[in-house]
Image (tube, rainbow, N blue to C red; front, side, top):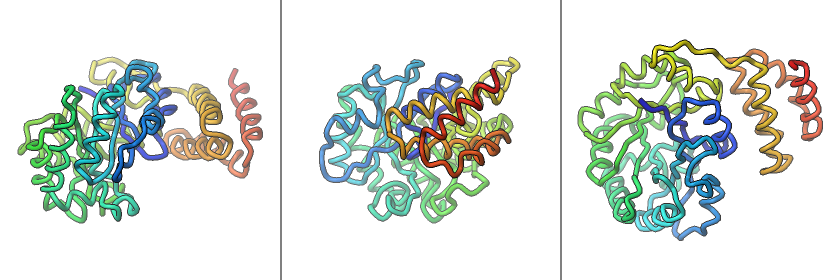
Length: 319
């Protein structure tokens, strides 16, 4: 059984991937999507999306990072996929699940699930371009407005040559609202023979077990649940191995926050660093009430120096 860290735009960048894979339990990461339009992108775009390409396509903890592409032009996607593979991407992933309106209006992401024939053409074209044997995977939702084409879309992706399929168990219209329809993933598994990974609404070990049971998948992908509880993947793994797990305590989370803030400040600058730590604190507050309390102390702070000073004092209080 494998646990994947989900690609989430503006959230699971290389810094977050580095920290979460170091905590443990994650077997595969997928980058935030690289948008492909009508041109061959320069190499720097792929290195920016996946700095891990400079480390044999892996995080510092040795976890492989697949590179995700988003677009609708089979030829351009194929050319860019071939380039990404030549740079060392361990696998290429195609995004057929993004629900963002701006993406869908540009004929990308989940809107492609309205046209299984186009899905087939995209996957077939990209697969043919990966003549070095780089695996090709795809991530889809259960549909755009409804689930009527879910099985047909999954079959088209398989028939075109994809090596693995990740299924987010909701339609675009359902967004991220609970519940996730894990039983639909089991229906997809009945019509395809390629490996299927279940995704959606896994926030706890109990959710993980129910997802595996209802989807009939041994592998799962977790997104927001891992951002809210960085130890969730490790907890799930230890449970399946029959071992007891020890939750991360809040002072350990504060250490991760401080490292995250400093790395983000160094890489992305002041504006992004202040926003990103507040964003992560809001997710962490789902599992850690202390996160909400600390967020309130920095909510109005706009300079990284103020946040850094408060964070250092806060971290020292646990020493």
